[in-house]
Length: 199
Image 1 (cartoon, rainbow, N blue to C red):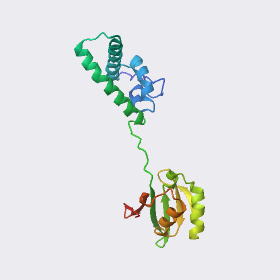
Image 2 (image 1 turned 90 degrees about the vertical axis):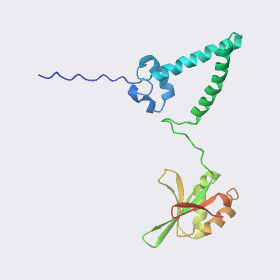
Image 3 (image 1 turned 180 degrees about the horizontal axis):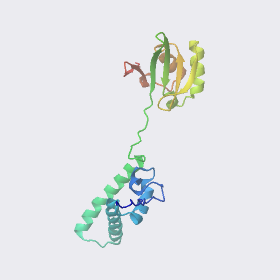
Image 4 (image 1 turned 135 degrees about the vertical axis):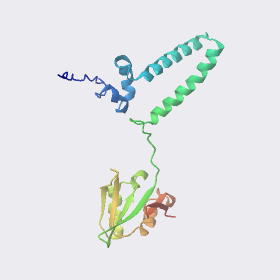
């Protein structure tokens, strides 16, 4: 007879509540590192090396501040703190999962979408990056072009203004006159899937 399979015991992280093998993909890997070093060192041997290197750097910095160090150690440790600072700056810019957060460019993107063969919608994205309230902007656009205009969440979960009708080329002049904070060089059209400057 075959042996009865035994249940697998899974070690869960007390910080992020994920299995210890998946902590690096969780939202707070930096917070999980001390817990992983103490409770699951075999899963992340690199963390042990990092921890021992950091401790060695701290000790060498303390010795340097006192003034006790050999010439070889002093040269090596003087090169390390710069690397440690640069890696800390990189960590500040990184999001959980290793993604880097990029600052959004201040630009207005205008796109014309055709639906039902004849009806057009002009989509205006990015006015909010210039400090313009989208609800007020949609009211002004609706009054100026005598059409319906509304604030809608787009496919990227960012708010945009949908204006009924093909007003894509008239809208550039109106935006630059009404809101002087938006320069004409920051306005772009999307034509055939390509971003084209309006000016």
